[in-house]
Length: 85
Image (tube, rainbow, N blue to C red; front, top):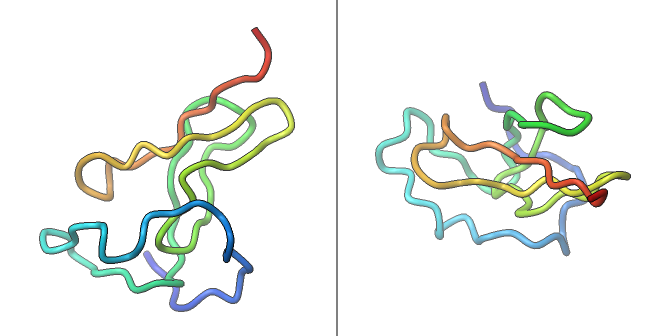
């Protein structure tokens, strides 16, 4: 499920450009600003609502979520990397 054109202030965050993502095999082609959920592995969240194109890293208090965007969009996920050893 996607929602169109977020007003969320995401400018300045590190992201790939929209055209960087190959979407020809996707059921829905996302436009910049469309919002969608990305599941999370580890950390405090189970998923994140992101605007397309998604942030490559998301800072959290105890670590950072790193986007794994290899393959089809339904396989994308954020993996939590803890700052604690």
